Amino acid sequence: MGGHTALGYFLAVGWRGAMSGARVEAAVWALVLWVVFLNGGTLAINSVFDKDEGDIGYLIAPPPLPRYLLACSVALLAGGQLLALTLPPAFQIDYAICFVLSVLYSVPPFRFKAVAGVDWVINLWGFGTLTPYAAWAATGRVLDLGHALILLAFCPLFAGLYPLTQLYQLEEDRRRGDRTLALILGKRLSLDIAIGCILLAFALWGAAAHRLGTGGWALALLVPLAAWLTVLVPWRAGHAGWTPARHQRGMYRALAAWAITDVAVLLVFAR
Image (cartoon, rainbow, N blue to C red; front, side, top):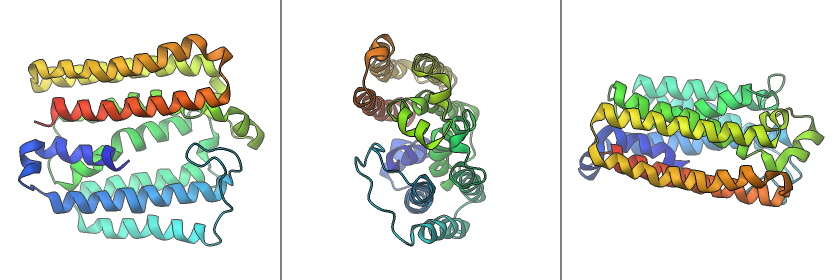
């Protein structure tokens, strides 16, 4: 999450600006607020109301919830919003939007993570586009069309990634009564949508490359595209016989493809 957030800073100032330390203090402070306060608070408040007992990806056997986890999560989220006042207004607004989305996503009676489609929209905007935009906004630079297309492309990228994170948890979600997107769509349609969304993301990056005149550098985007297709095409072809453990391994490979994508976007556009 830290790397995905920092991407916006490098897009805003370029490699030369980053090497010279342009707006680096504001970017580091924004990174702390976004990753530690906002993302940390979001994960904490989500855990409070999920009460997970099964494998949740990074914890095979989640421990009992700490007694003061809810208070801690609220302190992180609200404290980060107050501290955001030290940064440009665009960052403050971005943080406030994601603060609200975090509450709507996890906290009853809203708990939109259990409403198929709404959970998807929150994640593709919140994690996809608004997260790297936070570091961009911290620099104070006005967003132009070409760079807006770069950030917008992360919406369909995360629209494709999000259902992949749910496929191994279908039984857990069904038991809890959460009507997640992947549970409603089923495995086959979830994977079809994932492939379509990934292709749309790379089409938007292609449009951004044309707009910004990146030349031959745009060919570097073929590397993450190949990584995504290497993950998704076999997954789609054999999903019917995959166990939850294998779906989980597929999710981790998709996360690796996301990391490769961020690196390629930096190489092509942060110049």
